[in-house]
Every structure is written in C-alpha cells, then in structure tokens.
Image (cartoon, rainbow, N blue to C red; front, side, top):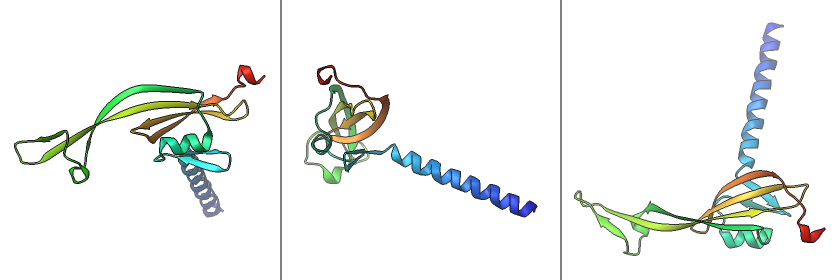
Amino acid sequence: MANHNAALKNGTVATAGLMLFLLAEAAFAFRCGSRVVQEGMHQWEVVEICGEPVSVRHVGFVVRAYDPRRHDGRDSYIYANGYRYYNEEIEVVEMIFNFGPRKLIRKLKFEGGILTSIRTMGYGYVEKDEQ
C-alpha cells in the first residue's frame, strides 16, 4: 500500500510539473482571433493580426553587440587582440492591446521591430466611444 501511495504522489507531482511547464510556455504567446502571436514575430505582423494598439510608446534605444559575420561594415571597433566587435542601436517600442472586458490586456515590447516580451496587464475595458 505504501508503494501505491508513493507512486500516486510521484504521478501527482509529475502532472503538476507538466502543468506548470505548459502554463509557463503560454506567457510567450497569445491568440488574436484564430492566429497565434509569439515572441520573435515582426511588429507589422502583430499589428496585421491584432489590429491597431490602444497605446504606442517609443521607450528609447538600446545598443547591442552582434555577430560580425552578419555585419555590413559600419560601427565596428578593432581591439588589441585583433577581434572586431560590432554594435547596433535598436529602437525599443512598447504597444498595449486592449481586447475588451472579457479578455486580457497585452503589453508587448519590440526591439528593432521584433517582439521580445509579452506581458499580461489584467482584464481589458470598453472604450468610451464604443459604449
């Protein structure tokens, strides 16, 4: 009987772990209608799928290093060890999508036009001009 209880407990823990894994994966994507929006998509694709956001905020710029094999020759630095390092300035844009009072508001962050972060901000609301 003790082995049965231990096996049942292990199965429950494994199931709970699997559920947490599946729920964590959902944070990197969401649905707009019948289409899935996920990290790595282009900004224009998201707007095409979800429509215009209720808010767009230009947060600023970040400077990132990138692979010199994919570089066109600008903004490079050569260090004493002979290696060349490249930097690029990337615009950061934040968009907020309100899908109404029965769905969650999504706050999306784009870096260089690529979706890098999806956050949930609670339930949406009805726009005043829609009432």
